[in-house]
Amino acid sequence: MHWFNTVGALINLDHPGHFLHWHFIEVSVANAVVMIVMVATFVVALLAPFPGRRSRKENR
Amino acid sequence: MTTEIDRQWTTRLRRRAEGKLPPEKLLPDTQPSYVSSWIYVFGVTTMAALCMVIATGCVLAIFGPQWWHTSSVGHFVNSLHLWAVEIFFFAMVIHLWGKFFMASWRGGRTLTWMTGVVTFLASIAAGFTGYASQSNFDSQWITTQAKDGINASGAGSFFNVLNLGQMLMWHIVLLPLVAVLLTVLHVLMVRVKGVVPPFSDETTEVAR
Image (cartoon, rainbow over all chains, first blue to last red; front, side, top):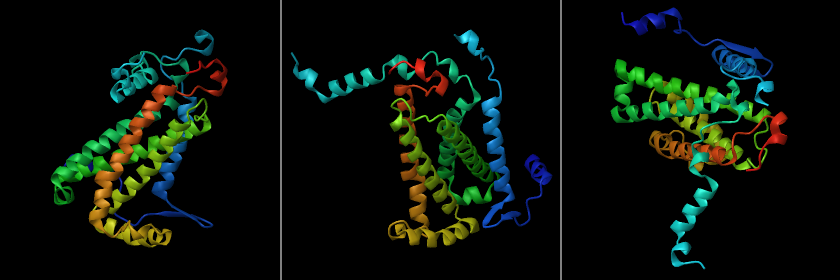
């Protein structure tokens, strides 16, 4: 078995997609996960300290 | 006194370009201190992903659909192309959020903002025509679902999503050309006007 078959076997994707319904909003679980990860990445990018950044006091 | 050489369009264009974008501004040695934040890395992440999209797209173009549908290496390069696109949009949207909440059109940066907006729209069209050009059941499903919406908008008279040849040409010629040219213009505008400062640093910004 090739290594990529092993990786692919970790998550079974051989089934119809799962969907979330809320009133008229319908979104696949896969897309919802991507959206949540994007928002989380945005928040982390704003809050996480950047390597080598000096404090504002030192900059002035 | 202006000479004939001064009046040449090449001379005038070069002087104008040198005035707007001297070499030290085009490739600067340093950046303002506020740029050392993770929120500023998503623009260059988007460009790195775009380079990967173009490179893998060129490999797909060389070997063709038979190859990317049937061989292991073809599947791999096809997946690289797809995932580079995923990262491209992921990073571009976070870049967009960051710049939107910074109101990055401030300080005469309207053209920088607008080239970004149009690049985003062109990229969506490039992504759509890519899905329409896969030449598999997925692309058949997507195009037959999309045709009614496109036709209802009136664009169907010249943009036929069921025409694989037309979709492929838009995907590999016209839209990449637009996206790359606008990206270059966008980056040049960033270099001309500088990276937008946070609101708190706006008063200290030097006029450019």
